[in-house]
Amino acid sequence: TAPDFQAQVLDGGFVCLADFREKRHVVMMSGAVTSPMCAFEIPAFNRLQSEFDSKGVSFFLLYTRESHPAENYSAHQSFEQKLAYARDLQRLENVKFPILVDHLDGRIHRAYGVWPNALFVIHKDGRLIFRSNMANHRELRDFLNDLLVSCPLNPLNKS
Image (cartoon, rainbow, N blue to C red; front, side):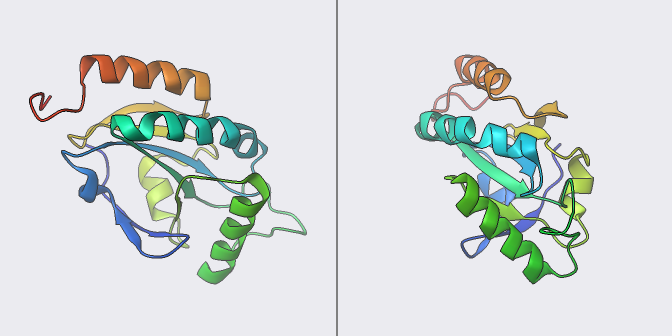
């Protein structure tokens, strides 16, 4: 079972993983403004989100700790600073899917695995069914296509 969580959405409100149970599969990529691999994958993930949203798959970027803190983006000292960095990532990289901002202590990131640019797919039944320590849009597209063939989202198929 995937660890449940509640996270603040960058644009307001909160998201609970449990809200998606029996409704939608969830894709969650971790990242930060100082993660070059996150920046590299975002354009392709924007396209995947657009392609798979109508097929019952929700995409999120979990904003975690800074991968490479330095003078422009230091390690987070407050949640407000973390929110500001997440806003910068959204603006600089044109992130089109919701950004969830992890708690200052990184509890969601730690619950799933602390790789800096990890990728997770959570089945609509609540199971963690895919984990990769490095997000890869090609691998994800193949996985989602296979998942939707074996488990189409419709009221008659509850698997």
